[in-house]
Image (cartoon, rainbow, N blue to C red; front, side, top):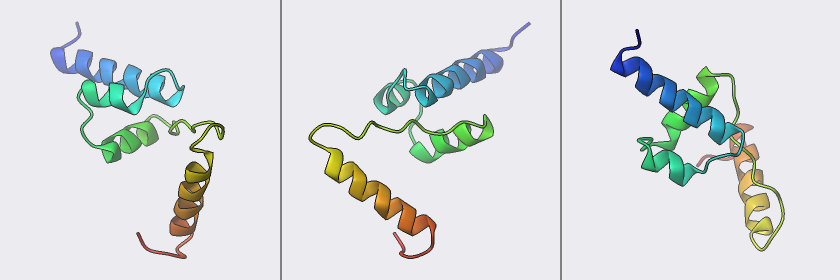
Amino acid sequence: MDTPNDIIDQRREKLLRDYAAGKVSWSTLRRNGFEDYIAVLGGLGALGLRPPIAPLEGPNRAARERGRALLRRALAGQISL
């Protein structure tokens, strides 16, 4: 028999899987109890999943490309955030 914690964990896991698949948004996760994006990234990592990647189209394309480049440089140790 599932305990209330098991049911919550199953619900959170489904939300994380749906987020990784692009089926739900970050705002949906926030409305469902995820207050910290670091927790989302940790949960995705624990499940062996990656965060979804927004398509590079539309008016915000240049901003997303700059953000991705900044993250790549930070991860490579070239800059500090």
